Length: 398
Image 1 (tube, rainbow, N blue to C red):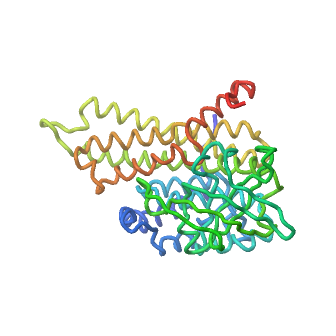
Image 2: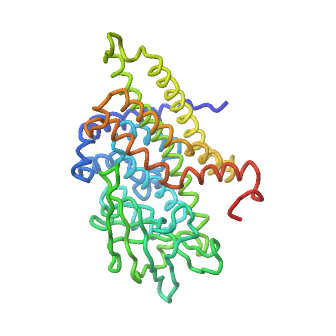
Image 3: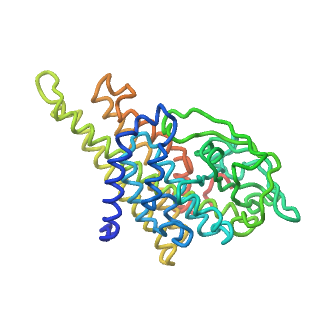
C-alpha cells in the first residue's frame, strides 16, 4: 500500500497555490478564450510563488521541487483554470525544466533558467512535426556539427508556446537527427532559441486551452552554440522520453483535478435543478454516472501520484526506469478519456446551457481532450504497458 500522506510543507504549498489560483486565475479564466493570452500579472504572480520551472535548482532561480510536490501544484492549477491554458503553460516548463536541469550544461542553465523562472522567457518542448508525433524517430529535422557549434534545419508543428517564446523571448528543447543511419541512436537534443534569425513561426487555432498559443516554426540553418546541447550527442532519443514521462505524470494529475472540479460543478447543479417535480440528482441515470465518474477520478489521482512518486524513487535509485515508465503510462492512458467523460456528462445534465461557451464544463471538456495526444497518444501508453508486461519481443514496431 502506497502512503500518499503529504508532508506539512507540501500542504502549505498546496494552500498557497490554491489561494493564488482561486483569487487570480479562476475569475479571469474564461476571458483567456477571447484574449488568447494569459494575463501578465498572473504570470508574474506565478513567478513570485516560484511556480515557473519549479523543478529547476534553486541556484538557477527555481524551487528545486520533487515530482510529487510538483504534481500538487498541477492539481490546484487544473482545478482553477477550466480552459487548461495556465496548466499547460506551467506543466511544459515544469516537466521540461526538469529535463533541462538534469542534462543541460551549466552555462546554458545559468543563461536561461533565471529568465524563465522570472516569467520573462518561455521554455517549451518541440518534438512534433507534421508527419512525426509519437514516432519521434520520424522527425525530419536535422542538426549538423560545425567547427564552432551546430546548424539546425527543419520544421516543428503543433507546439505549445510558440508565440510566447518567439515574441517575448525564450525557446524550446528540440530533437533532431544528427546521424540518420543510426536511427534513434543518432538523435541529439538541444535548446533552440525561437528569437533567432531563421525561425519563422506559424499559428494554429486549437479547440481549447486558447490562452496559450499553438503552432509551429520553420528552422532555416539556425546556428546554436555547443553549450545548448543537452547531455551527449546522439543520445537525445533517450533523454526526451524522460521529459515525456515527467509531463505525462503531471497531465494525469491535472486531468484528475479538472474532472473532479467538473463533477463538483455538476453536483451543485443536480442538487438544485428539478425535473418532473423532483431533483435531477435523484434520477438513477444521473447519480449512478456521478458515482462512476467520481470513482474514476479518485483512481486516476492515485495512479498519477503513484507514478510521480516513482519518478522521485527512480532519482533516488529505489525504482527502475522501466517500472517508472509503466506506471506513468498507466496513469496517462485513460486520463483524458475519463476526465472528458465526466465533463461531458456534467454538460449533459445542464442541458442546452452545457453547449455554450459560458459553461465552464464545456471549457474543461475541450481542454482535457487535448491530453489524449499531448506528450504521447493514449495508444502509445498501451504499447508501453504491454511492452513491460510481455517483453520487448512482443513490440509490434520491431
